[in-house]
Length: 130
Image (cartoon, helix red, strand yellow):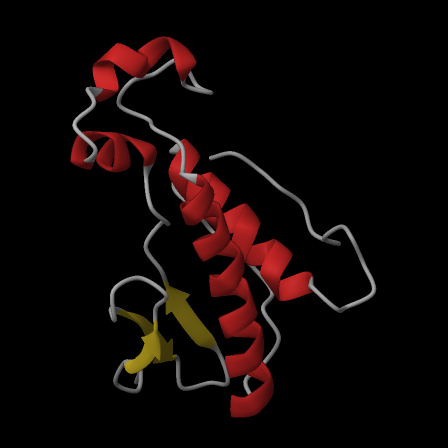
């Protein structure tokens, strides 16, 4: 039986992510993507659809992260690394993401944050779409 979720501080506006102990030594961490460009532009009075030609994916419904969102993703990885070390949890063995660009960018940034200071610039794992 899974243990109850443990709050994990999120870098965005005091929100928390969920960390769930899986009972048999495993931990599941669920996180939301970083700040997305379309919401940033909307809040600044711009129209995201007008920026469609500038998207990495060419899909207006699939906006990338802002530079702040990329920083948030990296910080997520750093915080997870600290939580794993200080909490005595097992190492991160897998990272799963939605195929949306903002989610993939968040996952990649989090992995980068996890690997900082580990003496490696690249992950040992495999990146697969799906």
